[in-house]
Image (cartoon, rainbow, N blue to C red; front, side):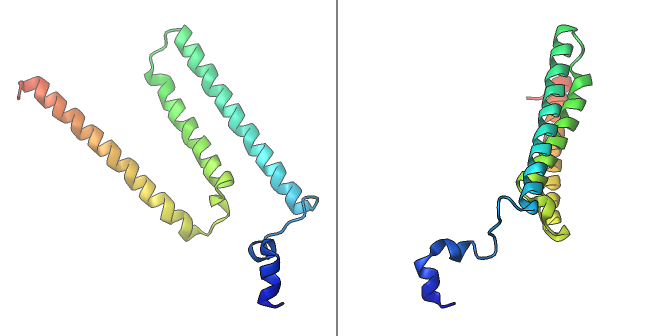
Length: 129
């Protein structure tokens, strides 16, 4: 093929190796996987709402369901990143390039919250101004 052939049809230039027949088995498997993950995300969300409503109407302390909410939110975030952002198909080094800075950033937030809480406790306990 000549370069001029690509100029005439730009779609071939950008989709040279990425075209996929929508009726192929690979395409149908991808769509099935997306529907499966969407179903899981919906189920997790329904569980979160049900727990939230149950705890609200039965006056359960917020500490108990909050741990569950954090776990379910992290699970949903992992599913979204893995499937819809295609991180699950990447090589291990690429995944670590994203996960390690994220973990350090979360640690950074927790450390500053802890430090701020300690400062408030010292200020309140000893009336330092």
